[in-house]
Image (cartoon, rainbow, N blue to C red; front, side, top):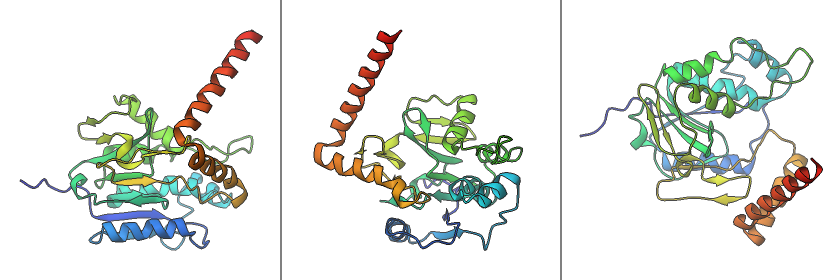
Length: 255
């Protein structure tokens, strides 16, 4: 028996700032069209979203921090319309049709964090409403003039921990709220160590392109990617672990 679809077949994404889309973004959007041919694709930008709707969005937009603008816009779109939000550097490999019966669906990014690069939700989902409301009483610019750069990953993970989510990277369901899948489903790329964990269950992959950063700021990531191709992501992880142990030993000796 076919399960009732609660989540509309609509893909939401954000593109604020008016810059041309880089090749990785174009490639990812093409993957949506290829693998989700029956889905409506809706771009949110300055022409169809009120950037003065609250202090957080207004201040983030004025500062040119468009990634933080999209943090709010994605949950606004999902709450009022329902559908699936995708970051512009998310490549889709297969249809989401088998997930549309959920109240919402999410995936782990690492074992202890929930990703926000791929989110599916029914209209007026309870979790999305709590997430949306978390932006209403705060601004993006703090009293000391610095930015409130707390990521939406940290925000939603904390919300979920408070309602019972176990941050163990494993499949979980919270009744009336959503379903939470392992990292391999929507975010199988380990950007810290440049490793991929793609399986037959992988629906999409977040490339962590960070399109809002200037080219120079992405050079470090490109160097790490080249290194990973030469020595392998597993070896990068081992090097990081070794460096961490050495640092811990130094601190212990200093104490």
